[in-house]
Image (spheres, rainbow, N blue to C red):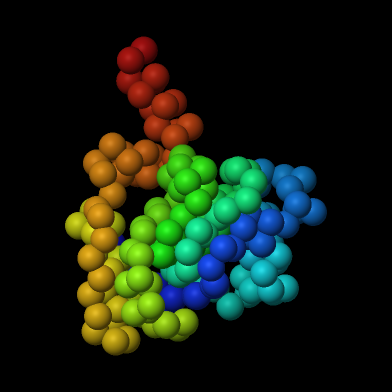
Length: 165
């Protein structure tokens, strides 16, 4: 379960908005997080608290396939992104890096900036504590949850290899 305040961003937010190219000189998650969404609005990340939730429109994460984008979101303290829809490469990169991504289609309109949310990705529910709405989404499949539990695909593979040794 995750609980946090919603921070809405628009539709078609590309990876350059999530983490502009000038910040791609590191793979340090915390450093990337300090510059999360700088391409959208300077200082955007300063209003985010650890555990808050990003909420986006259609085609979130379009553009280049850089892994830095989901790392920047994680580094900003955001464990979950809810969106109308995600760009396919970003969707896979997000899970591979350990970021939970939930597609909700038009139900994203039931979430306003600043709403308090409780998210249960295993059961596929998003409760908006502010409005009382409950949004159903596809639960995170068990094999994807295993990757998330390990903090991403690299850690998942390392653990599996270690267990086989």
